[in-house]
Length: 192
Image: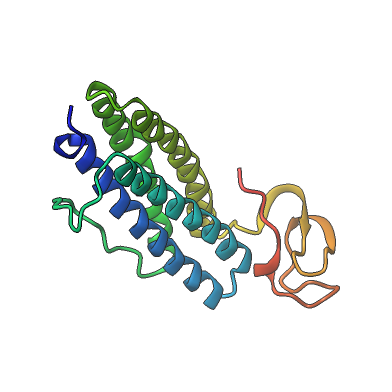
């Protein structure tokens, strides 16, 4: 099948746009976290944003490497504009990552495979797996942020300050590090 006439070509273009936008949306959430003192959460989300931009790069490279170099690719797709608050942004990210990992990219993988684009199908499959991991991280952050348990546990937990390395084992992280006075937002989080 001719690449530029395939559904895979259009799916790659939609995926590129979606991943690039997700990377930027996650940067916006990270900025909100930074502004509100959640430094470690912001760092984690920036890492996920970087992953999304790299997924966009994979899709972009597949397009140009397969002769899809064009001044414009016409696609029709919906792109979300949600996430005014940290909590809303995290909730939306959970839903978006789940949708990509369980529905969209597996479907695109099947189309690419049926059209004979094995390497592209492989990329869609691998990225779907990563999106499932992203969903789990965002879900952990969202649920703990929503429940006020980001820095609380039912059993003693080792908490470490990301600024000075101070460590304490207790059920709840300190509000202010007793060693360097960094706020709670600098406490390392162990994401499940």
